[in-house]
Length: 464
Image (tube, rainbow, N blue to C red):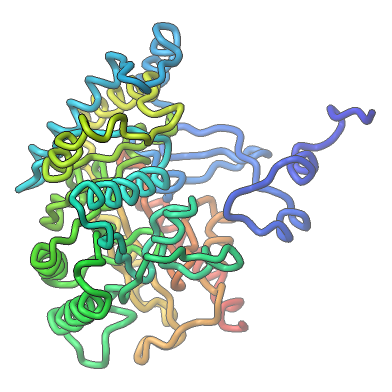
């Protein structure tokens, strides 16, 4: 037997670890990027390089790295009750209090919200799977067994389990997986900059999208369409902000056809848009809300599905006849995760992080616009709260697309300059979504490094 202690971590990684959303070829040839520590808004790589993390991990480390309050809460919770399942009516205090707090927070901050219960899982993907299963269950209980189809959008990201990946509207996630599954439809991406017709205003673009949605429902039959799922801001697709009047018009269509609205707030929840929830930012009245990421600031894998009274009353009314609702996970409602989530919310409230995101969002946009906005390959800079994007084009006048992968060169050079930004998979966009605890000075430094990276990457982008 060989001595594993003498194998480098990079080689051990190559031999043992199966990475998510990664190129097997690239990992085998180049090896992994290994991180060894993190504090505040910075992460440290093996070898000692420190980088400003303008991605907050994967849009998730909202309060920043290394917060002792969350570490202490987790340690105490492990000591008190390291695990408790929630099957068969079992429960635990941290999870009960977290459910009550989430219901109160959502109903108090989102106008018109009438949410009734919270179901817990482990990830944003399983939250969206839960939403889909509840939609099916709800309509079966109502005696509408044909009403099962779900409409998503091209460019949407809703996770990568089988059902969630089907809801995702980015083709790269479907390749060779036989996705999407039957019953999932995708309407057009509501990104005005890239997909508007020449001279089409945002209002006219919205009109066209609504006509398309109405036509899809008519073609499929409203009696077969159960739900519409949407991120308030389409994150992984490219930080696409909804065009003027979009969600109000969509909601009217859904209400007219008895179609549920699922708000995927996995990214936008917990302060990212400058409000507690993206539903508040954009006036959305959802029937189901999917939450994860910022719920614990990624200190523990946990998700939440908040269910409206409209749905809950049907489930409750049929319960005596149906018996147990046979859905759940071993780690649903994990008391350690719940304790960390409570401490996370305490910290966000004490430091008013949603307000910090609202205050610093314009600072981030202005820094990007002033430092890279005139670059000939930069087509659009946009954002809301601490959620921003730079979209690249080959020609600013025509908005012609760059060759595939050009924006990845910018992200690679940004890493070399000491800043992490994400190269997104749908359009040539790099995104920034830093911890909500970031300061103005850190934004200035990160965007300065990003501007240097873009200049360094430009000759390679033009050569593609």
